[in-house]
Image (cartoon, rainbow, N blue to C red; front, side, top):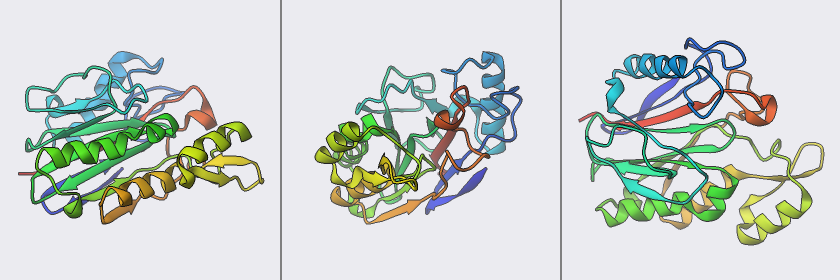
Length: 241
């Protein structure tokens, strides 16, 4: 599990598939209830992960992700599954925000001066819908400054692996040119990482950090495209004070 500082006073973590209690094919740190894993195992994995990160298990905000572009602000009272949306932000200390993924991009944002953090789930549909720019805009409207923000794009299906039909690539890249990619085999693909990076840059975010791992290539990570029946990793972000 990757665990470090995203900005002064702000921590983040990106989980892998090791360290939980789930059985195959979800072995072992599956954090997603949307899978066919045993709910009690997912709940135990979430509890164990929170405690490993020094967080109270009831101080983690989980979204019911639906590939939308919807964003909401959460507070200390909002520590249960949210209504369907794909981005959240907060100014509450030690309230962790979590974004689940298994090929889509978990994206974290931090403005240490405003004391504000955000998390988004951005796959093909969410990226085209602008969920990450919407999160930047919502945080700015609440007092953050994009020019002070640091972003982290977590592990995802890379542009060299994320194969799609030619018609899908043409339609997607017509709307967002940075999505255009080609796999190592020369087939049509989408580059979600490049597209989100471009969106963040256009939104005025100067520092975009990358977790360069590809979920399809890295067996330590969950990948729906590689395994179909699989678990979910999570990226967490929280203010430490």
